[in-house]
Each structure stands twice: as structure tokens, then as C-alpha cells.
Length: 179
Image (cartoon, rainbow, N blue to C red; front, side, top):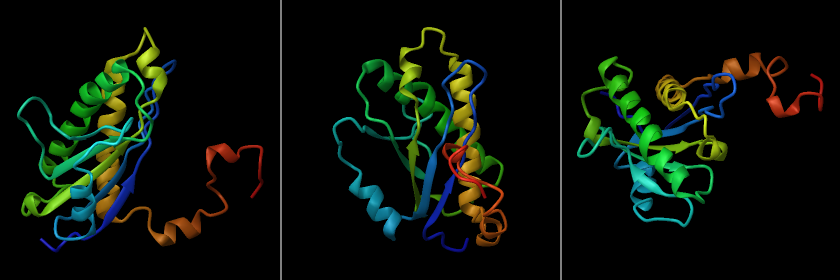
């Protein structure tokens, strides 16, 4: 395996109608001996409101490569923390293992890699009595696989970004600017 030094990827998978379960993971993958490994080791403590945890599929099932996840949103409630460390963590772990099975992540040399995944979990999920946990799983599973694949393939390429500069714009810019 050629060394993976520093790769980034992201993906967005939208929620089902009426849900707040959009998933938008941002992934950093790299060698344990490089800057990603240093960042990973530096995350081995806690910051108030932004829990960091190893990704496990279940008790005693730490995924490979070793992966640290944290939330992009400040945690204020136990319900939010439970969703993050439950359904979202399980979906993330399953996606990582399936990336190995499907050859997206190289099986050889996994202990030489580590990942950091920043998770988007909408605070409304923890307040929604009608939360569809299956949809929460689906969006996080699909988005994590997409983000890892994009990181390892280097997508989007610079050529793609240049080509779509005037045809793709951030959703927040709708009715604000015209290309």
C-alpha cells in the first residue's frame, strides 16, 4: 500500500421528509506517523460540549483504522449525547467496516492509518418525539462511506471544482448572488 499521508473528504446525505437527520461528516485520513496521527493523539482528551470518542460498532468492537469522532455542534443534553454515541456512532462504525469489505479502505496497513470524523447531528433530533432512528442510521452510514471514498479518491478534483465554479453554489447563497 502506498502511504496515505493526509486525505480529506466530506459528503451530505439528506434526511427523509419531515426529519432532521441530514448527515454531513467531514473526514481526515492519514498515517499515524504524520500530521493526522498527531492531530488524532491530540484529541485524546475532552473539550466541554464537544465529546470525542473512538468509533466502535458495539461494546469491545473498536473499528480499524482507529477512528476518533467528534461533533460539530455543542452537546447540551444527555439525549443528544445518547444519539451521538448510539445510532450515529454505530452507523459510522458499520460504514467504516463496510469500506474495508468493499475495498474502499485498504485492508493492508490499517494499523498505520487513523481517521478523524467530525459529525453533524442536528440538535432538533434529540428534541423530536417522532425521530426516525432508522433514517438517522441511514444518512450517517451512507454519508460516512461517501466521505471516506471521496477522501481516498481525492474528490472533487481541482479540475471538477474549476469546471463547476459557475454552476454549483452553496445553498445558503440562493437568492443572494447570481453566477
